[in-house]
Image 1 (tube, rainbow, N blue to C red):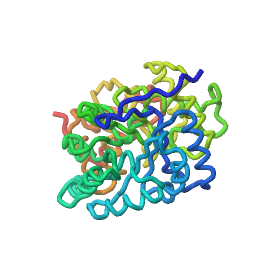
Image 2 (cartoon, rainbow, N blue to C red; image 1 turned 120 degrees about the vertical axis):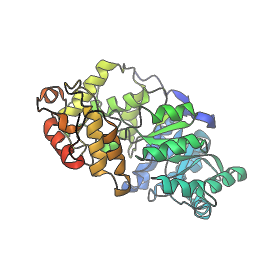
Image 3 (cartoon, helix red, strand yellow; image 1 turned 30 degrees about the horizontal axis):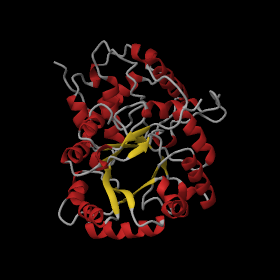
Length: 367
């Protein structure tokens, strides 16, 4: 039976947010009435955190009428991709009009994707200055930042102590590799951690016609539970567009469950059985079940390096080479034994992928 929504502290903001929030990124895809019905249902269930952005089409405008009726029941977060103080302040005014409110609880610098953009945002006349000024004016209660992929820039932003919250993409497969070092670092700095893309943008969904468990998609439910079970995060915000999705995700989060290694393995094996491209030709589940390798190759990390090197934007692909060069044993150490293939839940032809890595990164002597 559902147990009600747990609340967690959103880092140094001191806001008490429900661990399950509402991501409004997909609202441009649905009529205003459907979006409003989904929002009302979520708020009725106790969800108290809504997240949108200027870059999400008409999402803010669809939230506005609901917020006007129920402003005291929820925290509203929005974002701007503007990099200058002038641009950021201008977009804040648009957001306030769209959202039909005179303040937002959280204003975020959106998609800060590399060192140069981070320097723009935090430098003289940058977006951060606007957020700080808006907080002084009472138009913003707190401010944060959202980032993807670029680990060096993410680390710099965390260690700057300039922000109150941090939004990162994180899933049971840790598809942007932030779970081992960056999430703990952000928590250590008392940043409120908001998790986007817990379902990898819709990739972690069972195929149509697949069996349900207690009426729920086992992959969706398992993924949300896995992310929410991480005590370092404050809130997870799956994108939703319907009352049905709200109800299902609420049940997944609030129904009593155990998330131990057995549950993790079951989830990984269920995902692996789909043998699905998880986006940008990412096939590896990062589960580590292929290990140990007799040649001491760190297979998941090597595949991560290959994925970054071949699929990330041009200005970020260097991170793949850096990761590969940091690994002790190169891809050309593979002896094609195929023992790892037998253990891989996704059935990846690992030796073939090793050859791809050699082609991408070159031969490297192990002597």
